[in-house]
Every structure is written in structure tokens, then in C-alpha cells.
Length: 159
Image (cartoon, rainbow, N blue to C red):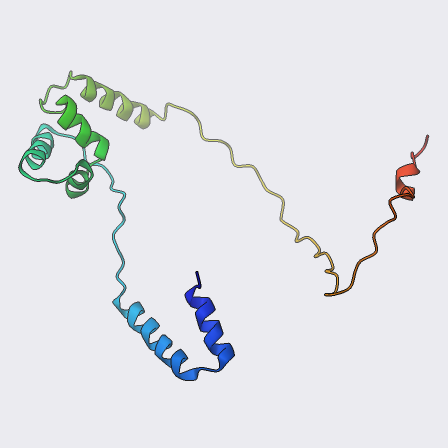
């Protein structure tokens, strides 16, 4: 399939200035109509019984998917699934398994407990490699004869 860039290059090669002008106008129009979309990744809110009830209400009264509900309320889609399938987060019990796990994770994060990040290794400055010379088009390069071994292979250093 031809890309827009290839099409533009073909028009330039053919000298079709009128078509290039139209293409430039269309590109400019498309650029002016573009909008920046918000990121789909959402920082999750703290799950509360009220939020869980709101999730169940949306699930029962609308035809929204779990992903749409999660995006609407700003929570992780996995949390929406937990509320709908397992009834988690519906009571405000601080001893509920999900609340205990959340509190433990928050405590570990606050204390900095966990896997330490890898230390940053100093990197040597990159030196660009020399480009290999390319053979000229149409010319064949010399290849060593296969019946005579290369002289470098017969040298054994100090032996």
C-alpha cells in the first residue's frame, strides 16, 4: 500500500504542482482539526464503599462495560471487576481482606520496604563507528580464493 509520503514524492517527481497544492491544503486542514486526547491511563482513586455502590449502580442501570465504568469513575478496571463479581469494597470494614492488603501495601510503600531499585551504571560515552565503504554500483568486489587459505589463519603468534 502506498503511503502518503510516497504519493507526495511521486507528485513532486511528476511535477504535478496543482495536486501538491491541494495536498498541502488538505494536510493543513487536518492539522487544524486535530485535538489532543486525554491519556487513557488513569491514576486510581482510593476505593470506598460509596464508590463501590456507584460502580454497582452504573453496572445495573446502564449498558456500560467494566472498562467504561472504570474510565468514567477514574478507577482501575480490575477494581470494577472485584466489586461486580465478588462484592468487594461494599462495606467499610477496615478488617476486610482487601482493606488490610491495601493498608499493608501503603505501609510498605511509606517505609520504602521492597525490592531496591537497580543502581544506575555509569555508561561510557558512545563513540560512533566508522562507516564501512560501500562498493560502487555495478562493480564486483574481490573475494579471496577459496582454494588458498588466508595468510592470517596460518599465523599462530609466538608458537
